[in-house]
Amino acid sequence: MPSVQSFYQILSQLTVILYLIMYMLMFSGAIALRYRMKKAGRPFRIGKNGNGLMWFIGGLGFCGSLLAFVLSFIPPSQISTGNNTVWFAVLIIGAIVVVAAPFIIYAAKKPSWVDPNTAFEPFHWEVDKQVQGAAKTVTTTGASSATIASASKEPDNRTTTGISSSGMSGKV
Image 1 (spheres, helix red, strand yellow):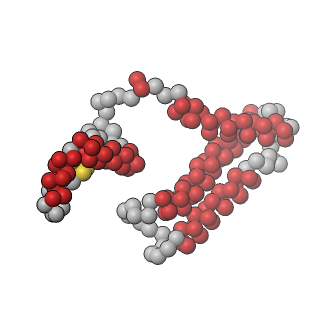
Image 2: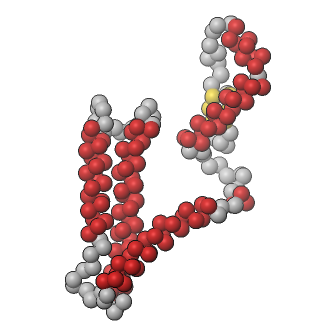
């Protein structure tokens, strides 16, 4: 890099690239979640019927972010950036390193990093797995109580499956 100004510019461009990667993931994730979680309660919904408006808004946002992503690799003409190969190499390698770092940390995580006394609420997909696991345990171990409940032909509306504030699931 020929100057501090050009190095600052490349760091700014790297920041923009990382934010645009996040925006592209966000727009594509919004479209994907419309299909994976159709029945999820949403405080706001784009479009009343169907997913056409979601595809339009999400696609427009994704295409805009992709265009800005591609254009951010063009070196500015106002600043002497030196060799274009160095410019591209620093941007590409820097983006790969910063995007890969969380995956490496996640792959190397240790059980000792988790505090068992934390009051962290589980994500909804973790809750679903816990509820399914609890339901399998109840059906295999409590077959006699399930037989009694099914023999009465009336649903047991007094018990509901839920998650406590400590993150434990079960029948309440």
